[in-house]
Amino acid sequence: MNRKATESVPLPEEGWVEAVRRKLLNWYDENKRELPWRQNKDPYRIWVSEIMLQQTRVDTVIPYYERFMESFPTLNRLAEAEEESVIKAWEGLGYYSRARNLHTAVKEVAATYGGEIPRDPEEISSLKGVGNYTAGAILSIAYDQPVPAVDGNVMRVFSRWFALQDDVAKLSTRRKMETIARHVISEERPGDFNQALMELGALVCSPLSPSCDICPVQEHCQARKEGVQAELPVKKKAKPPVPSEVSFGYIRHGDRILIQRRPKEGLLAGMWGLPSSERKKGEVVPGETLKQDLFDQGLEVELGAALGEMEHVFSHRRWWITVVEGELPSPPECLPEGYEWVKEGEWDTLALPNVYRKALERVADRSRSWIQGRLF
DNA sequence: GAGGCGTGGGT
DNA sequence: TACCCAAGCCT
Image (cartoon, rainbow, N blue to C red; front, side, top):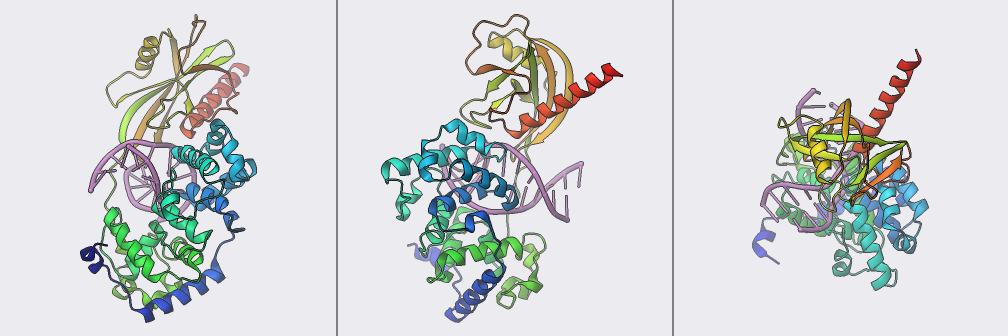
C-alpha cells in the first residue's frame, strides 16, 4: 500500500460512516427499482447485467437482458452457444467486444472452473472483460463480499459527499475512490450498499441537476454545504469525434445484395455491413472511393444514383455517409474473402450494427417512395 | 496515460 | 444544434 497516496484520501469518521450507511440502505430498501437482474442472486445473471450496463442506460439494457436470458438462461448454455448467435443477441447494443469477451470468459469458466464463477478476486478479474468495477459488483452482489464496486455513479456521489476536485477520468482518482469505498462499505450488506450508491447516483445524485432536496444523505454532503454540487464531479472534456467521409454500397445482383464482413479489429470489428469505404472528410467524391476499393478486391461495380445521405456519430468518430446504389453485372464465381450475397430484405439472421440498419431502412424508404412514384 | 470502442436519450 | 452523458474495459 502506498502511504503517500493513502494520506491524501479523506477518510470520514466512524460516526459519519454509520449514519450515512444506515440512511443510504434504508433509502435503498424503500426506493430501489425492480429490475430483471434483481430477481435473485444468480452470479451468472448478475454478470451478464453488469456487462450490458457498462456505459449503457438501464432502460436500454432491460429488453436486451430479457431476450438474452431467454436465449442463454444459464452459464453453460451461453458457453455452448455459437459466437455468431451471441453477437446477434447483442446487435444494436453497441460495444460489441463486450459480447465477445463475455462469451470467451464464460467458456473459460465452464472449462477451468467447472462452470462456477470464481469467488477469488484475482481469478474473477482475470476473466476477459471483467475489470475492477465488474469484479467488485459480482463479488459483492452475488457473493456478499465486502469489496468496492466503483463506477461513474459512485465517483460522482463521492466527489460530492467529500467535495473532491480530482478528475474522475483518471485512474488514480478511481483508486482513491476505491479506498474510500472500502472504508464506508457495509460489511453486513455489501451488495446492497454498492447498489444503493449507484441507485442514489442514478435517481437522486444525478449529473446535471441533482435532487438534493429529496436526498437521504443531504445533511452529510460537503458539496451541498458549499453549494458546489452542480460543479462536481470534475471531469476532463472528451475530444470531439473525428469526421470522415464514408460511402456505403447498395449493390445488387439479381435479387441479391452484396454484404461485407468488417475487419476483425477496430470499429464494429467482425460485424456485417454494406460494402464501404472511408476517407478523410473533404478529400473525395462519394462513391468513387468505394468503386476503387471494390475494384482492388476484384469486384467491378457499376455505380448508380446516391440513394441518401446520413450522419452517424460514434463516441470517437463521425461518419458522413452517402449510400450509393450499384450493380455487379458480371460477378466472379467466387466472391473475395469476407463478401457474401444476401437476398434483399433478408438481413434478419445477420448481426448488423445500427449504422447499417439505419442505412438499409433509408434505402427501403427510398425504394418504397420510388415504387409509389411509379404507381401514381 | 490516453485513446479506441456504439448507441440513444436528455437538455 | 451540439453537446453531455450511461452500472468500463482493453491496449
